Length: 132
Image 1 (tube, helix red, strand yellow):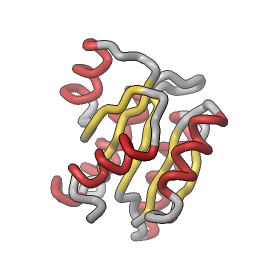
Image 2 (cartoon, helix red, strand yellow; image 1 turned 90 degrees about the vertical axis):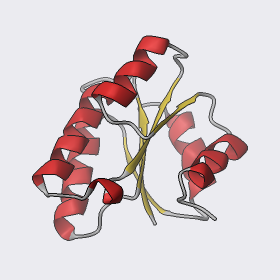
Image 3 (cartoon, helix red, strand yellow; image 1 turned 180 degrees about the vertical axis):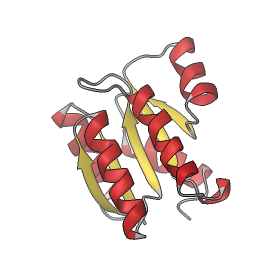
């Protein structure tokens, strides 16, 4: 399994990386623009990400816009809906509007409020059928 961790916060990136490292090959992006570039390149190489952990609040290009673009790239490449990346939105905001927008406008698979801990993240991956 391949994962893309997108977060402008060093601590959050490292925490998620440490949790996922035993289960996935992890790559990191520090903003939405880097995430889009990495996502597109991986898909074009035929080595797509199965999981994307995506922070909502970032400089350059925020997570909501990056998520919309990621889903658009999958449509461009005719990725079957069942083969789409599982996008787990991570944020400090426990905000109903942000949750609504991420799911219904952006196409997020799930949503976790920071701080992310091992039990919470691995439990979410299990519920999504990504881990046994």
